[in-house]
Amino acid sequence: MLSQPLTLNMVEDSFTDILGWLTDRFGIAVELTEESEIINGPNTEGRMAGILHAPGTTGQVGEVVSGSAATLTADGIIALAYELAEQYDDDASFYMNKKSGAKTIATLKDSQNRYLFATGLMDDKLATARPNTLIGYPFAYSALMPDIGANTYPLLFGDAGGYLLARRVGFSIKILTETYYEQNQIVAVGRLRVGGKMIEPWRMWAQKCST
Image 1: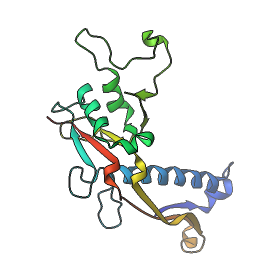
Image 2: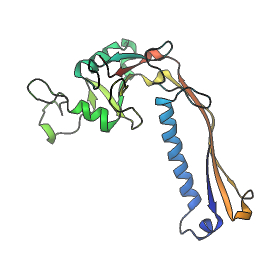
Image 3: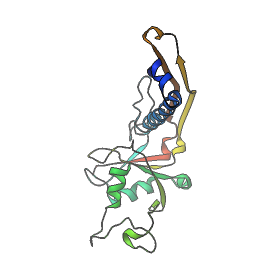
Image 4: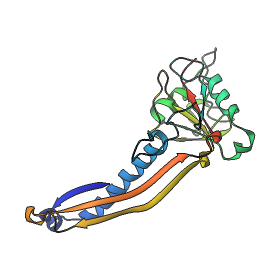
């Protein structure tokens, strides 16, 4: 639940639709919170069970070590992709954040100091279009994925369709016009009821920075 008090003066004197603007901001906050819960939710009271709630434990997504104590490796990425069962390949993707996970992968080099993350079939280094696959699978960014570090899970791979998202009550906003009227205020209250958990954990695997 979200709430934001506003003075009547703000509403009356604003040059724009301040309640419409606030509704948009609430919507953005809800989307980010929901994404964070889907990935990292701790499965406590009032919180969702995220995909990375407890990798490698019973009933949760499996884990594949990267082969390095504190970072990703090319061998580890390949091992992660090949752990997924064949029947889920068509809908499989990698998930990572951009500033840590993707940056590290993009700068992996071979023994000749050549980048492994090629920029295309006719590889012309920085001049070609950005690649949109990693070892043949699509990838997507989420800023809510963990950064790379020892014992973290900065890379997910698989079919996200194994996660069940249950929206009990859609997001709505109610304007309370009387409760704080003596303080010259109204209050915008946003409400949403949503839950989620990985119901088919075998559809995804998590990469752990570990040996």
